[in-house]
Image 1 (cartoon, helix red, strand yellow):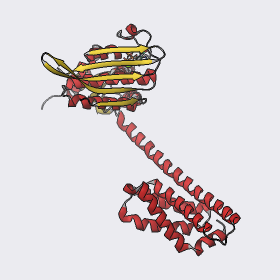
Image 2 (tube, rainbow over the protein chains, first blue to last red; image 1 turned 90 degrees about the horizontal axis):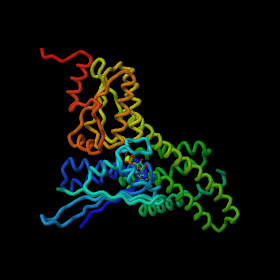
Image 3 (spheres, rainbow over the protein chains, first blue to last red; image 1 turned 120 degrees about the vertical axis):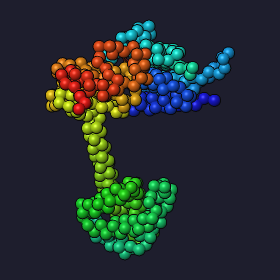
Image 4 (cartoon, protein in one colour; image 1 turned 90 degrees about the vertical axis):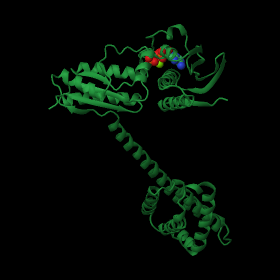
Length: 137
Length: 273
Ligand SMILES: Nc1ncnc2c1ncn2[C@@H]1O[C@H](COP(=O)(O)OP(=O)(O)OP(=O)(O)O)[C@@H](O)[C@H]1O
Ligand SMILES: [Mg+2]
């Protein structure tokens, strides 16, 4: 049922490809243009974090479905995976303004607000996996 | 190449040419069939093998020059580089076959002759490959330059007012160019107000926002003011979701409104007459 695309990220081109793949699927699933922008931006943040902090990794983009009393709900699921340094203090990186690279520190908390579901799984020294879903309302 | 080798090749010229054509046909059917312009195929093959044979008696530099000229012309017409490298390699194979099937030749002669042919052909192949990657790198370099010029233009639209229209993805490289071009342009055109138009930027993420904020701070340091225009509604929403505060950053919805503000800031306005 689900279309899935995997995009490798180890250059800035990878970030752009991941975004494009996300935008295409979001469009296909009928997301509004505001939601398309939210999804693309979220992918951009996750992919850039991979590029900056883990050097390489991948972004997996797929469609998901859920049954509800009101009927079937469709959504897009983004998984960002890397085998980089991992995140020691997850609470800290979710604070607005926390950055180790002189950035705005708005990426991760921003993704959480842009999307509907958000989950970080990270082991220091082993890598990071972030999953996030946006449902089409 | 040694006269004795050339003589040997010339004495069997027709045979070698025929075999070469068969060999090239065989290779190209397997490997590059789709890429070759077929209408010119036989013609080009004939030209190529004649050229190889004619260049045998030239010294190596002259030979390289002639073959390079030929290669360059065809590469421009869309032939793959592998056509040349494989054509040269096929020539080497054919010569080896011709020599080994000739019973009157001693194996030592075959060996030394073949060695000489091999280094002659390798020299030419290396040169072609170098040339080709060289011209490819050169093209890439020129394209990069062209892109660089296009990527962050600052246009003086009125006295003291300039516009930087940004179109397309902004990566780190481009973000740097935007900064440079802004600061240089402001000095050059004596701008007091710069409008950065992001209508054509598909994604404004934290990195892009950060660079724009930094650029506008730098602009302020050189005594000018930066106004952000062309923020599409969906981009405005994502910026808010990201939690980025553009509150202290002058923005206008459209370029036109931005220009009006720029004129006001420089004590001018547009009037109907
Ligand atoms: N994939 C990852 N691997 C390891 N560390 C990460 C990863 N992603 C984020 N981090 C850490 O989390 C911090 C916060 O990330 P976040 O994306 O919120 O902000 P930022 O990247 O520093 O700046 P911004 O995204 O605003 O440009 C980063 O500075 C980095 O230390
Ligand atoms: Mg980030």
